[in-house]
Image (cartoon, rainbow, N blue to C red):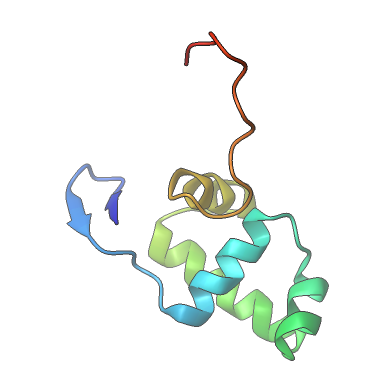
Amino acid sequence: MRWRHPAGDERVGWPLPGREHEILERIARGDSNRTIADRLGLSPKTIANNLSNIFTKLHVTDRTQAVVRARDAGLGHPPPPQRPGASR
């Protein structure tokens, strides 16, 4: 998978290790910190710490920007199906 750094250079690979990737995917699905913590058997504080690390690695400042990055990378819900004949 390729991702674009905000500075414009392109790098190969996804910048997040497995646990952070899983947390990002879950926030892209709309899960709350509490829901993620319960599902992964972690504390909400641990999830918050992981999110802070994710924001730093993705060069974003908040949850919304992280979700946009995740969706751009194909995480979370798939895009809604297009109607026949609709163009992008």
